[in-house]
Length: 308
Image 1 (cartoon, helix red, strand yellow):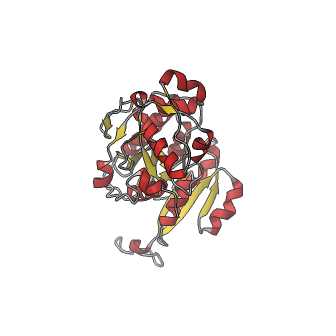
Image 2 (cartoon, helix red, strand yellow; image 1 turned 180 degrees about the vertical axis):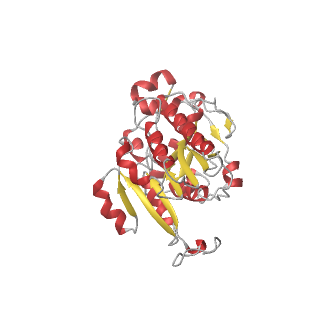
Image 3 (cartoon, helix red, strand yellow; image 1 turned 90 degrees about the vertical axis):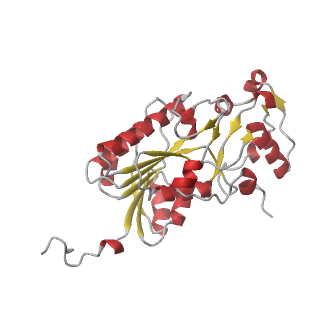
C-alpha cells in the first residue's frame, strides 16, 4: 500500500474525533463538557467510582484513578491528543506530586498535542496592588501558591521534553464565581456578617465567571504557540471591601463591618485572612489577543447580579 494512503477502513483524519482527557472534572469541567460538540471523544479521570454512571449518561468515558496513586493511572498513557488538567494539588507540601504523576504517565507513550493546566493567580504572591501581566515572575507567598508554581514548572518542562510537539498552556485563575456554582457567591459570608478591611488597608481582588473560564479553557486547547501563560480574569477593578459592599447591597444584606488589619485576623479563618495578604490587578490582554476570548461577563456586576 502506498505510504500516502490510509489503511483500508480507516477514516480520513478530518473525520476522526479529537480525543480529550479531562483530569479533575468538577464544576468547571462540567461546563467545559457542555461546550464540546459531537466531534470530541471525551474521557475523564475521576477518583470517585460513584460518578461513573453520571459521566456515562453524558456520553463520556469515565476512568477511575487517583493522582496520588500512580499505578491507577496506567490507562491514561497515549489515551488522548489533548489533556485538560483541572485537578488541584494535595493540601500539603511545596511540590505538586499529582501533576508529576500525571505527566510521567503521559510521557510513557505518544504525547498529547496539547496540555492545558489550570493554575492560580496566587503564584504571583503580593504585588502591592500593581497591575500584573504574565511577564511577571511567580513569587508565591504560601505553600498553596508554591505547589502551583511547582506544577507550572513541571508542565513547562514537559513541553520542553517534547521539543514543541506538545503545546502547553498555563491558565492563571483568580476567584471563580457564578450564581449556579456551589460556593460561587458571597452570600454565606454575608450571612455571617464577616468583616472586611478598611479602605486604607484593603487589597485588590480578581475574579472570573465560571462560564467564561470554561470557554477560556476550551480556546486554550487550540493554541498554536507553546509554553504560554495566561491570566484568565475579567475586567473588574475592585478592592475586596468594595466587592463585598456591592454584593451586600445586591443581595439585600447589611454592609459588612470594616476593621484594620490587626483587628480583623481574629474574626476570620486562616484561609480567609490569607487572601487579604496579597493585592494585585491582573492584566488580561494576552487572554483577549491570543485566546480571542470575548468575556460574556466582563465584570462581577454583569455575572453576579441576582436574577429576576
